[in-house]
Length: 72
Image 1 (cartoon, one colour):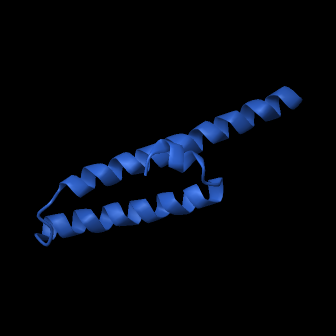
Image 2: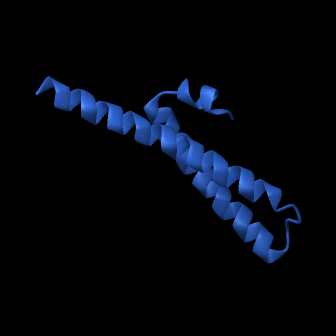
Image 3: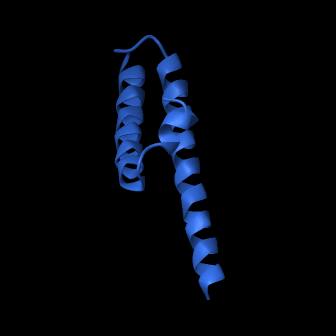
């Protein structure tokens, strides 16, 4: 999922997506260390997607805080 697609989602959807991605990363690590998964490239892609979603959520938090500060 690209950043453009992620920005189109609502914040609640992003939080849910972030939880799902973290669970997926846990499962991938578990499979890798137990020898069930040979392809480790999925780990890198999942970590990057987690970072992408978390960054966009943080950008929205900062924008909301600035907007609240301007109102006061």
